Structures are given as structure tokens and as C-alpha cells.
Image (cartoon, rainbow, N blue to C red; front, side, top):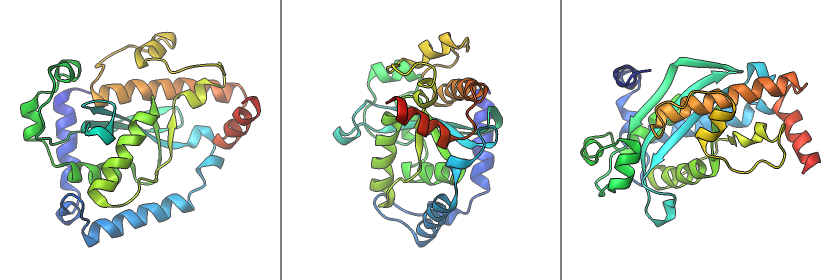
Length: 244
């Protein structure tokens, strides 16, 4: 998906949501936001995703670009990208992408790595708006990420600071499925896993580009898991618990 298409999609989905959803300021939540988040949390409690057939499993694969690795030391999210999947099928028309506003200086290293300019962050949507819109996009689905601890730590801090609520979505790392075939697998760079799976490395360090590659990795190993005889996430969890 090209940049113009991503921008157009972002504008389209923005227009479908009530402006009151985005009315909160940092550290405060509007009644509409609170009601919306509580509804999502209820849906997550009611869903039994662990028993869903792998070929029907709905997930959202996402990636964050950040100013560093340590949210507790002031590093921030500067872009979010995501794509929806059902089973191994990537829904290429169901994507999310947004820059996130920041007034802090952006290091030359991060700017070069992500191709994001400091001036772009000055005019990007406020973090609270982007966060609510992202939660609207993912709804109550499971999240998938590569090196998920990074994404989880930033989402938890961001959600608490902006909405004063916990980020309760289940986030599964790609290594969850990879370990079915290599139990001793350690953390590998995204491009290295892509190379092993013969996936083209494209738009690296762009949040949506990385999400797309991560989705292909998830789909690749999800197919392998089914071929190996696994039918649900519960079966995968139980098997990995046995092998340690």
C-alpha cells in the first residue's frame, strides 16, 4: 500500500467516528471514551479466542515506531501501523496508520531510521486521538507483534497516561508460533526472520511496512502450525508449556 493510499484510508476511517470520542485531553477521559473502553473490555472478556480454529482466528498485527526503547525514561510513540488478518489471510484493505504528535526533539538517528521528520510530528494528530482511533480499529481482537514486549510496554504506558485505564488486549509475539519449530529460538531481527521465510523486506522501520512483514511471518508460521496438526491457540499454549 502506497503512502497516499494509507493517508486516504486514515482520513476515511477518521470521518466515521464521532468527534466526541476524541475530546479528552492528556490524563483525562470523556464519558464517551470511558463507555467505549468499557464496552471493548467486556467484549474481550466474553470472547473465547483460545478455542477459535486457527484458520478463523481474527487478529490485528501491529508495529510501533518510537524515539527509543524505554517508555519509562521518556521515550515516545511516533507512529502506529496495523493490518487485520483472519487466519492466514492478510486483509490488505483493512489497515491503520498514523503519525503521533510530539513537541520533543527527534534525534537524527531516529529520523534517518524511520524516515519521519520532526516537522511532521509537530502537525500530527494528538496521541490521545490516535490511541482511541487505534483501539477502535483493533476492537477486541488479539494483537500480534514482533518483539512484542516493546509494543506492550509502550501501549501500557500510553494508555494509562492518556486514558487512565489499563491496556488489556492480549499481545502475542511472533516467536509464539516460531517456537513450535525451533524451541530454542531467541529474539531475531524482523528482516532476518523475513529472509528465513523468503518474505521480501520492504518499507523497513515504517510502522505499517513492518506490520505488513510481521503479518506475513505470522501467516507463514500459522500455516505451518496447522500443517503440523494444531487447530487452536489453546493447543499451541499447551504444547509449548510441555516442552518448556
